[in-house]
Length: 232
Image 1: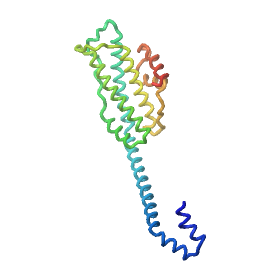
Image 2: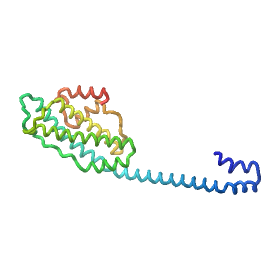
Image 3: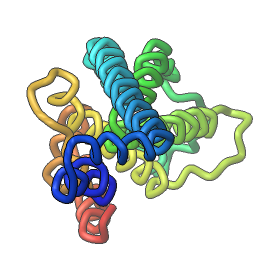
Image 4: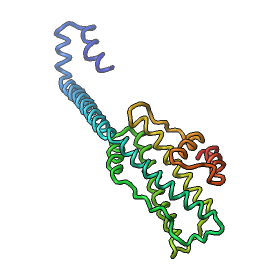
């Protein structure tokens, strides 16, 4: 503001046109510097705008494949739930020595979702990127736990099968399903992501999506309710 006043306003107020030209001539070096600075700001703004538009286009392109990737994960979650329910029922049966392999084969974690999630995370806005990254991190933990649960029932395993531990794994699987459910409307461009913690009703809906009868898993409802009340 000071520059504008002393360069453009004050010379016209206190002098004639010759005085104005004299002032501008004496401040020529400063004017060149100011113009160069303004030009750099304009160039930076244009570059930032173009970069943002490019990021937005790339995100839209990556997001187009997100619904399919989420559907793949949901199929994997359902297969995981079947394995966990069998493991829980057998671990809860005192007459079952749990020394024979589970009837359910270990589900294979889909591969296509990785590239889709990676592109979405790298081009999405921070809050969306963090949400998708959280799903990925929980997914990796789930996959590791699922493999351990499957190994525990092999004849050569000496691991103790604790029903409450399997129930906790079912709870975490429910959280994953609920997080994916929260993401579907955004992926289909019909809504935004709810970034709040998963509620009890969302957990119950997630269990239904997984074909888990909550009454069959002893204290699963109470466990889930306590977790929700304490902020998951």
